[in-house]
Length: 86
Image 1 (spheres, helix red, strand yellow):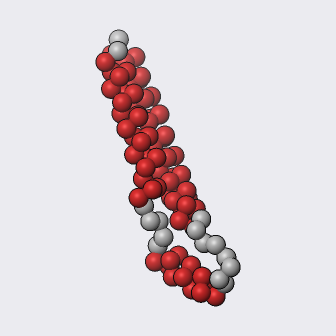
Image 2 (cartoon, helix red, strand yellow):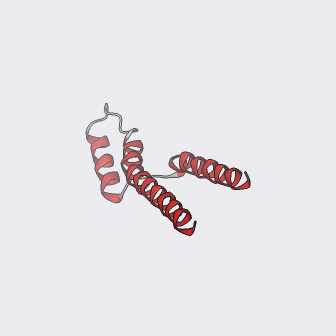
Image 3 (spheres, one colour):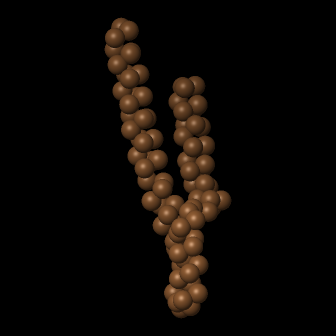
Protein backbone atom coordinates (compact mmCIF):
# COMPACT_ATOMS: atom_id res chain seq x y z
CA UNK A 1 0.00 0.00 0.00
CA UNK A 2 2.84 2.38 0.86
CA UNK A 3 4.55 1.67 -2.47
CA UNK A 4 1.33 2.48 -4.34
CA UNK A 5 1.04 5.82 -2.57
CA UNK A 6 4.66 6.71 -3.32
CA UNK A 7 4.29 5.73 -6.98
CA UNK A 8 1.05 7.70 -7.29
CA UNK A 9 2.70 10.75 -5.75
CA UNK A 10 5.68 10.42 -8.11
CA UNK A 11 3.40 10.16 -11.15
CA UNK A 12 1.35 13.17 -9.99
CA UNK A 13 4.47 15.33 -9.49
CA UNK A 14 5.88 14.23 -12.83
CA UNK A 15 2.59 15.03 -14.59
CA UNK A 16 2.50 18.44 -12.93
CA UNK A 17 6.05 19.21 -14.02
CA UNK A 18 5.37 18.12 -17.59
CA UNK A 19 2.18 20.16 -17.59
CA UNK A 20 3.83 23.34 -16.34
CA UNK A 21 7.06 23.09 -18.32
CA UNK A 22 5.65 24.48 -21.59
CA UNK A 23 4.35 27.56 -19.77
CA UNK A 24 7.83 28.70 -18.77
CA UNK A 25 9.73 27.53 -21.83
CA UNK A 26 10.51 29.58 -24.88
CA UNK A 27 11.18 26.99 -27.51
CA UNK A 28 12.38 29.03 -30.42
CA UNK A 29 15.85 28.31 -31.64
CA UNK A 30 17.84 31.17 -33.08
CA UNK A 31 17.05 30.27 -36.68
CA UNK A 32 13.32 29.97 -36.03
CA UNK A 33 13.26 33.25 -34.15
CA UNK A 34 15.14 35.05 -36.92
CA UNK A 35 12.82 33.63 -39.57
CA UNK A 36 9.72 34.66 -37.65
CA UNK A 37 11.01 38.17 -37.03
CA UNK A 38 11.86 38.67 -40.69
CA UNK A 39 8.51 37.25 -41.79
CA UNK A 40 6.64 39.37 -39.27
CA UNK A 41 8.04 42.56 -40.75
CA UNK A 42 7.22 41.43 -44.29
CA UNK A 43 3.69 40.13 -43.62
CA UNK A 44 2.00 42.24 -40.99
CA UNK A 45 -1.34 40.41 -41.16
CA UNK A 46 -0.05 36.90 -40.34
CA UNK A 47 -0.14 35.60 -36.75
CA UNK A 48 2.94 33.66 -35.57
CA UNK A 49 1.82 33.11 -31.98
CA UNK A 50 1.38 29.35 -32.42
CA UNK A 51 4.99 28.73 -33.43
CA UNK A 52 6.29 28.26 -29.87
CA UNK A 53 3.50 25.80 -29.06
CA UNK A 54 4.25 23.83 -32.21
CA UNK A 55 7.94 23.65 -31.42
CA UNK A 56 7.21 22.57 -27.84
CA UNK A 57 4.80 19.92 -29.10
CA UNK A 58 7.39 18.51 -31.50
CA UNK A 59 10.09 18.56 -28.80
CA UNK A 60 7.91 16.97 -26.10
CA UNK A 61 6.72 13.91 -28.01
CA UNK A 62 10.15 12.16 -28.23
CA UNK A 63 10.71 12.67 -24.49
CA UNK A 64 7.30 11.22 -23.67
CA UNK A 65 7.93 8.24 -25.93
CA UNK A 66 11.36 7.61 -24.38
CA UNK A 67 9.85 7.91 -20.91
CA UNK A 68 7.10 5.42 -21.76
CA UNK A 69 9.61 2.92 -23.19
CA UNK A 70 11.82 3.34 -20.12
CA UNK A 71 8.88 2.85 -17.77
CA UNK A 72 7.70 -0.33 -19.48
CA UNK A 73 11.25 -1.64 -19.67
CA UNK A 74 11.74 -0.99 -15.95
CA UNK A 75 8.38 -2.58 -15.11
CA UNK A 76 9.20 -5.65 -17.21
CA UNK A 77 12.64 -5.94 -15.58
CA UNK A 78 11.11 -5.77 -12.10
CA UNK A 79 8.52 -8.40 -12.99
CA UNK A 80 11.24 -10.68 -14.36
CA UNK A 81 13.29 -10.26 -11.16
CA UNK A 82 10.28 -11.23 -9.03
CA UNK A 83 9.64 -14.36 -11.10
CA UNK A 84 13.27 -15.49 -10.97
CA UNK A 85 13.53 -14.78 -7.22
CA UNK A 86 10.68 -17.16 -6.40
